[in-house]
Length: 308
Image (cartoon, rainbow, N blue to C red; front, top):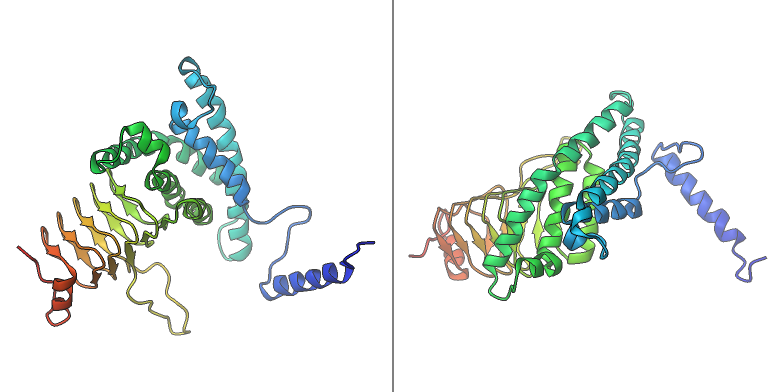
């Protein structure tokens, strides 16, 4: 018998679980879990980092002449593991949506196969992100230092992979993968966000990029930047409406400095510069420079003031 007299606690926890499942109309399949595993997904993404960058993020004893052998074995193992997690998500979705299409394992295999075939494009995008960080930070000693050390690059490895899962209609796996990175880096990028090549997050802590944000190429953000929603419309029943375009569009070559907050479906024109700690809810013209002073003026005029 436990010295802590835990039998009553165990029974009470069981009652709480059963009440929750009853309230949520959730029935467990006998003998197994009904949701994907964060731990399993963490292992998968660690393997995929090595697949994408074998001589830098792969095993320490890997030799270059064995790269393809290592990648073939690791990728096959990771895709089987990812398939198991995708099946859990799709089965969960089917149980919650009785009117939806029946669960189809072949569909799950097709999605994971498509994910695997997109990995070369993911690697090309990540190469552009690494180069953007190296060229954009005078403190960067080499591209290898950037890849091994920069939290913004780690966040983008997770995001580029998560975004592909999101595109393949596996949003739960995508969100779990992005939140693993969020916990490690303090950078919160929703997997639905569309981010172009050569993206650089300098320092990174506190950056937030919302689900429907669209970022062009060669965009640079500094720490504590928020690309968020301005308001959250509700439907006739008082529930938040899902999937609406509610986050900013940031065009090519935009720089947003530390602490700036950009809210709503506004458009930041190509080459614009948004200064530190600016609060922005209006469109910004291409090439404009917006500072705290000009954004205060914008509260009295229809749009932000562009400085020469």
